[in-house]
Image (cartoon, rainbow, N blue to C red; front, top):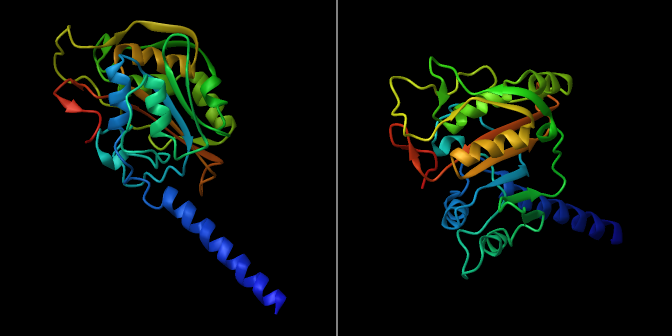
Length: 246
């Protein structure tokens, strides 16, 4: 009888755990909007980064397109804060339901939202040189186009190959700069030298304030790990396409 009761309790525990995990990852591309996070940062004229673990189930995602189809399975967060406070306090309240999420602020004001235990080895890769020009132009007018230049750096490509890390959009064409772009639009030009991958992402935020996202995912059927990178931005750029869905 005792053995039977133990078995029932064990199965019940598994089901509860599974339901908790299901709540986290059941619908990876149906995540809540990043609007409250971006609004909190924008109000204080700050930017930040969001680093977390997930499963990168982006089979239906259209690369580099700013739609909800490309949302990863974000960590759990509240729709908005209920009290007024500093950006750091506001974001800590937004993530209060996720004890694994640490929210910190650096001396320059940048807000770091980092889930405990996420490997950051890739973010620390040092890149010798990144040149922001291409597609027939001497500048890049889209943050996710800039991302493609960063992740195409030889040091990043070599590290990902050595460690069997996949990136869903590898080899895909990032949004280009078709036609003539008004020179007064936000853009990145020139080069970055001797920077880590995360430092390069931070540099893009200086031109396109918002959040860069890094999702680390477990082994897939083809790769040891899969990673997802993307910039999210409140403002409209280029032809007026928003980089964040409401």
